[in-house]
Amino acid sequence: LFFYGGESHFDNMRSFFQGNGFSRIIDQPLFIAPVFSGVWGVSDEDLVRRAIDDLDALGDQPFFAFMLSTTNHVPFEFPDGRIELYEQPKQTQHNAIKYADYAIGEFFRLARKKSFFANTVFLVVADHNIRTVGDSLVPVSAFRIPALLIGPGFTPGTTYDRVCSQLDLLPTILPRLGLELDTPMLGHDLLARPADAPGRAIMQFGDNHAYRLGDRVVVHQPKKPAVCFTLDAQDHMTLTDEAWPDLIEEALAHALLPGKLYQQRAYRLPTAAAH
Image (cartoon, rainbow, N blue to C red; front, top):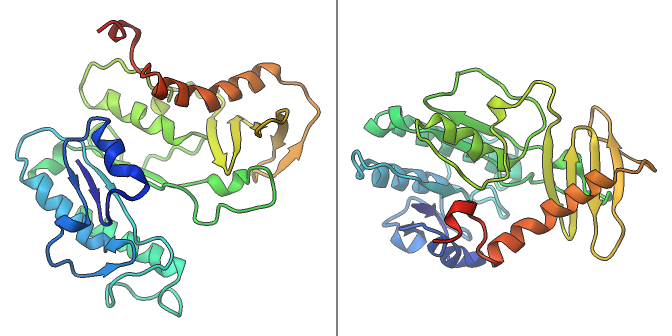
């Protein structure tokens, strides 16, 4: 299921999800008497309450559900009286962040009362930093985002503080669902990584593609040679003349491969390719 407070044809999401295995899409036209509607659609609290009701109605049926929040976008609209404002005026990014946090809390307050809660793994993750700007080819420090995993198989209070990517989150979840699975995913199971393994991250900034491995970064730009940087502890980038041909090739492969796999319908296990 895909839950979205706006109109799902935006950004071609409806056709993408329908073409990639999602059986139900719940978007703005299906919300009855929402408590608040703005430019982006219904509020996050409308979104989470509808999701709770629909998931609860599934009973014991296993599900995969994806919710996309919209409040934390310009012009930062949300209902009155839900939070103590962080600052004035009301419609600022900090107030919207605080409201989005309130709505996430509302989701978990309601979910804890449902039977599916004890058997469900929840992932809360950011899409991107609201301040992904800068004069560098790729502002690496602006790509730090939070992710929260809650559910069976995950120890409360545990923090993973090494470099990783959104690509690693699903491969980290799947082994803890009690299922025997093989997948073609490029991500890593973070909880099975060696302690000395360098972290990897992939970042897109406009037409520039950055690939990070440990404290090294390769940036590819259209029709230009790759550029290499080193990072300090604060993720400040320093141009380097060091030659990393293997890393440059690995970075380019990560930039090009996903599109080729998708376009050629080759994103599958080798044993499944003949079927």
